[in-house]
Length: 311
Image 1: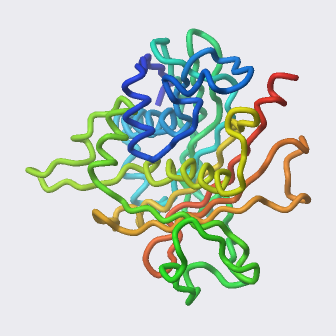
Image 2 (image 1 turned 45 degrees about the vertical axis):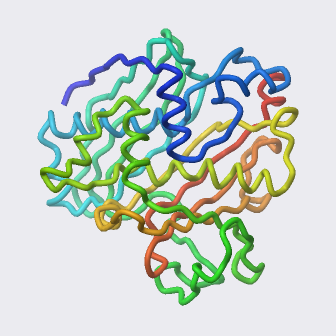
């Protein structure tokens, strides 16, 4: 269970494939649109945050197998994958990307966990840092409520609400984005994330397994469409991710089929829950499937590009 690092490299075609697979129309990733962003410090397109996290998921999967840790997940009922990452720098295409996974920390007892520190560097500079933990219960938004009722027990029919609409205030005022778990999009997302799609999908062998980060990547689409609805100026006032905190139910993930509906609910957290920096916007995000079961929960922080430039 030793620490190890691997090096990869993204090209623009990988960025295009990943963003098209998840309907991410952020100008930061567009090979032409990036130049429309006023005072864009990156001077070119950048890799998607979820694209990097998908590659981390793949490397962690290999790490678990290499160190014979997979059986421990099953024996201890560690059905939740939890990711927490802070973004330090953007990753640009055609640059070396090094992912280091630290030695696995194992905790047994009443709350068993597997935990690994992870860092990502681009051209030797820190780009992302955080951890992945396997647990029995979700670490983030463990007591998610909708109108005072647990999501899984809610009788609210989200299919009755239009895509890209807001739920009533008495239902939390969430913005709803509806997507469908399309296998071809998942395959393209994997390819864009430098991952062999055959690990998850192989028709001849009857293998159809969605990767963990793929459904979570639609959070970007939901946030962008909410911002579009609210008439955010994507050229003058763009936002960038500063952190992701994600908990994914692997059991529910294993139940997904092609064209399964995914209802993504997002809302900005109240000021008293906000980050220390008043300019940072904190969103709670949920991915719900059949019977309003929660596939994933996430807290994402967005920082205005203007604030980053001042810093």
